[in-house]
Length: 359
Image 1 (cartoon, rainbow, N blue to C red):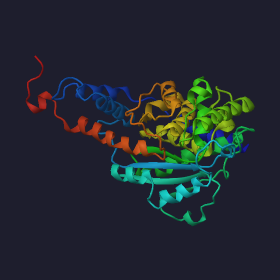
Image 2 (cartoon, helix red, strand yellow; image 1 turned 90 degrees about the horizontal axis):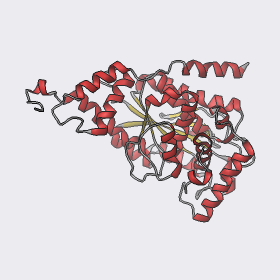
Image 3 (cartoon, one colour; image 1 turned 180 degrees about the vertical axis):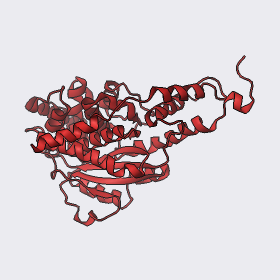
Image 4 (tube, rainbow, N blue to C red; image 1 turned 90 degrees about the vertical axis):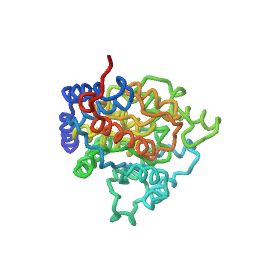
């Protein structure tokens, strides 16, 4: 009964997700074609302006209030030696972010974006952070099980973690125009590689990268671990919740829920790197229209990242060889959204400026 109620809540959110509004897209396109410049001279920024108008149903898309949501979770598969860093780094980096000492703090600050850290499934109880501004406790469980030996979590927990992400979107929505996805979880590139393999149909060896910077020998072992996880668990590619439960992570499910929640609220969500895109792909598998609200910040050096973006038919804004995660790429890309809106709203048309158009 509890699971039915949970699924009902998830389904009610999915039912609120519609494609971008075509009338606003057409109106934005019409205006941009008349601006005092050669046709579509600002390229992808103009494409982004059209998307933002369609997402927000506005010719003055609201993008000023930006928040990066950093989902944290631990992974049992770290016991297999798939990361260059020990599992306790998840906890240490959560504290570092809360102390404003991480890469995401620098880039979010530069972009004028706030940061919210959410404990979705870390081992540490974070007792000292419970009452801290910018920290939200949504722990489903203290880390996933080892996916090379069995499922990461139960299906009920998979539903709960997606719903927790939706709840975060709804909770923050009154103060947020644009969401950004971030994550912190040692071992999560291994889970993301497994998710990518299932949902893109590509081989684990094609998709799995060095993550935190492991050696070639360690990478070969990591690929074998991903392959073992797929063979042991046999996730169903037709069922995103099954994939999440079998080989995912709590922070990945939280990201999926945040994206679903943002789409239901008709708010743009800027998706960061490899792990965040795995969460986006889970959301996309549950409701394909969610792609209409996703802005892919960049393409990382992880080989599976581009394949996941291609699966959703989305193109990244940048390719800067990023591989940090935390939401850093999303924070950097948020500057582009304000630039796109400025083009749409501040540049005059030929008629408005009294400039002669193309003969």
